[in-house]
Image 1 (cartoon, helix red, strand yellow):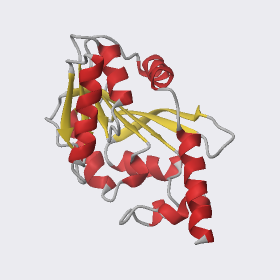
Image 2 (cartoon, helix red, strand yellow):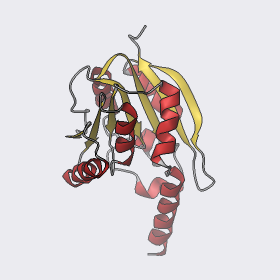
Image 3 (cartoon, helix red, strand yellow):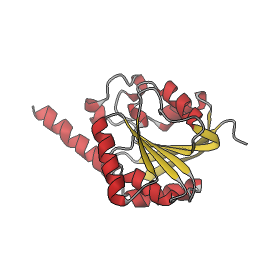
Image 4 (cartoon, one colour):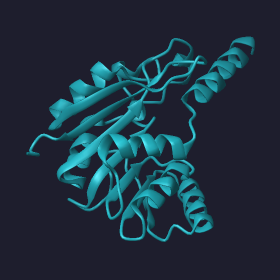
Length: 210
């Protein structure tokens, strides 16, 4: 029982370390990839929808945001958040464990925040993201390296590289290169915090881009 409570405490610390204000983080994203009005963005594993709503505001009425989640309850939460924000350009879709479940060539940007280390079939998901992006499109992966205290909460079926909950940027890049992406920038201090591991951001493009 004591070990379980200790582990739960570490999980809460890790979650706090990964937290950020959506508007500030999306503002940084906008600078990194020149995100602007009229663009189409996918937020894969959009959680409660806070970041998706902020993305919708950034791309404006002429743009579009696809927010995906596996669970129906989470999709309902995102839909409610979009309605409260008046984000009529935000569409909610069911995610799949092996793909985005979005049309081919529909997006200028795919954004995946603290989701990549949960993937049980990264090769299939990465291939699907590649198809979802238009030529020259950007794939931005924000995640954090493994930590010893989060090893108590490793998602099922994620494999050896994610066995301590999290994934190193090097391991993620190896998988992403194999899927046809090339790195544009690696940002090591994406979301620094004294509470736990700093999040990093991998900024990538389809390898067939000019």
